[in-house]
Amino acid sequence: MTGVVSGAVLKLARQSTGLTQEKFAELLRVDVSTVQGWESGRRPLAAMNAGDFLRLSGRLSRLGAPASTGRHLREAVEADQVLSTGIAAEVAWVDADTHPLAASVHRRTITNLITWPITQKTPEHLREFIPKVARRGPTPICPSLHADERTRFFDHLLTAAERSMHADEALLRRQAVYLLGFDGRPQVVAWLRAEWKRAGCRSAKQTDVTGLLEARSASVALASTGDGTHIHDFVDHMTDTRTEIANLNYWAHWIGELDNEQTSDAFMLDADTRSWTGVRLLQHLMNRLDPDSPHLPLNLHTLHALVASRASLLNGRPVVHASLAGKLDRLASTDCLTRTGRHQLAGLQYALRIAGF
Image (cartoon, rainbow, N blue to C red; front, side, top):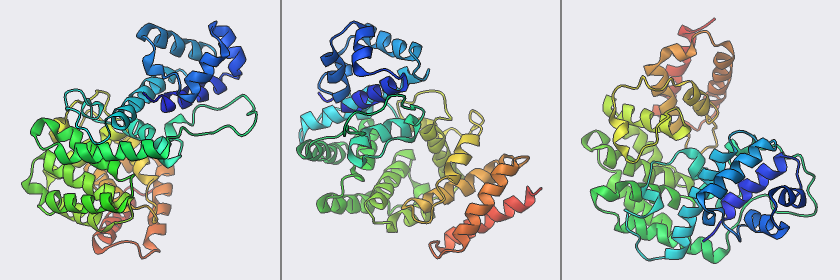
């Protein structure tokens, strides 16, 4: 079992309290080697009993770590479980009833924690941990996996994606496909192209939400590997209200606007979207209008759909208005947009003029 992600989060939390490992161990009445084992992942936090884990999380917050520390640690343990399952199973099949990738619809916080040891990019939501302890020596700032562990993990994801063909395995399949976008091996990229051909070449309006999301995962994963052709195709396939609603509901859950945990994708078909405001989603998508982003076509399309469904989001918000106008002007000055993208950009600029100050 690996505990590298939860160990790294624990280290950030401990550093945010201003305590050294030695002082932290003293306060917890444990040996310093225990704290070192937790933070390195050699002693996975997932192996602790629930009571001890809750007491550790609570103690950190009382010592000055953010109040959200417990939530961050729980999500990190979940990320470790996904990694550990894949590394241990390698090419073996793990039933969807017990696979952590099939337990719930992941938000970006969980996904970014799972991929942290691979991308070496600290998730945005962990930036609230502001270290108050000076580092001593060249200590690693990110969790890491050995090369063979990474290979076993991705080999397992491929097995999970290839063998998850039943309806009750759909969540396992699409979340495995999405994570395969972080692999990059030629044989995996070739498999993803075949997956797009299977799932993405059908008109999205003729499929259920499962088909839509399978196509989405394949196109986004391919874009992550540098093949951006199919994400344009996916966006062009979203042509009716039902698929637009499913896409918006997915994004709302992804960034945390929906409070409830979801154990299947069925919630995305809920036509009543009043349970979320769109304020956080608007800011999230605005921040991702990057001409160099491989996912720009989907980000721009979703922002256009969001503003079209909630034009009031632009009213009475001069800072948002100015920021979005600047980002759109930057996009307009590039040649990165397709005809569809230019049409969506023009629609957003028109919405800004209507909501002008």
